[in-house]
Length: 237
Ligand SMILES: [Zn+2]
Image (cartoon, rainbow, N blue to C red; front, side, top):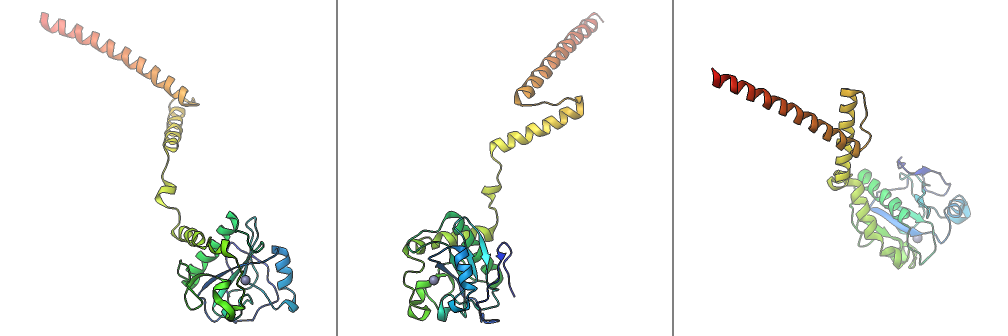
């Protein structure tokens, strides 16, 4: 039993219970249709077809078959590969949102089934594959998912790697603006504590600094005067 967090569960009736022998990787498909149309088809026993996952062009990610069960997407490849059907027609490219959704599935397969984050070279390999790579044993679907999507597979691997790695140092490194905003916030808090007044912005802050400087100058001038007076008194003895 494995259902992917982040995918919405829409169970369909076409699958082989407990039939997933192992998981070599994830196979990318193109539906030649819509997300809803495919879901209806996979609920139709006449179809003799299904897939574990489905994506919509706007980024919907559905799970149709539990990964403990065998989906019917790529014939001889069904027992050992998970499947993702993507909304669209032959010749399409996957949308940016679909690339993300496929990367999520691959990253999850990596975490749960130790699928390597790389392109699979064929049915006996592991990683991210596509329907046509299985040749006639996988049903001879030479145009699924199409050359343009096959060319996008490295991008899916790259995005999956980022998901697995989590946010990088660069992603979380503050920009100069973040630093400025943080300091401004701290100074605001300090000023509010000290005076009960907010410093609303950088200009206000600069005005505060200028006022503080003036006050300090006045104090220093007064001290100088005092020192001069004391010095005179010492000289006089
Ligand atoms: Zn296919």
